[in-house]
Image (cartoon, rainbow, N blue to C red):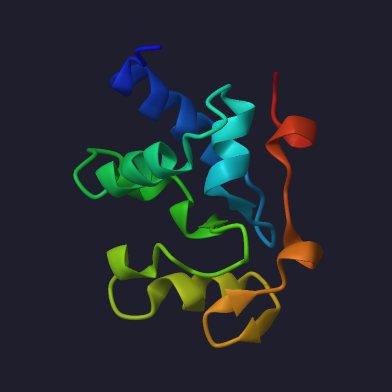
Length: 114
């Protein structure tokens, strides 16, 4: 199945834009919601693309982590910005770069505008 990358990226951004402060979701949860069950890496590519997107700052990409709650996207933020933003939103950390995913998980299948 061929996926239209531009359309997929815009759909990813739409989901990410709905994640409320104090909540996080995972690359895999977004991919599953969009009907691409094995597309977690593609979600990561879409978020990486925000670095060059004209409105890159409008999406809260810092609220997307891996399924273990690790801040795997932090390399794309300046210094420790991802961690700092999550802490400012009240996200609880289990260790330096892993959040309490059970407490803060936001499921797009249950919460997204359909």
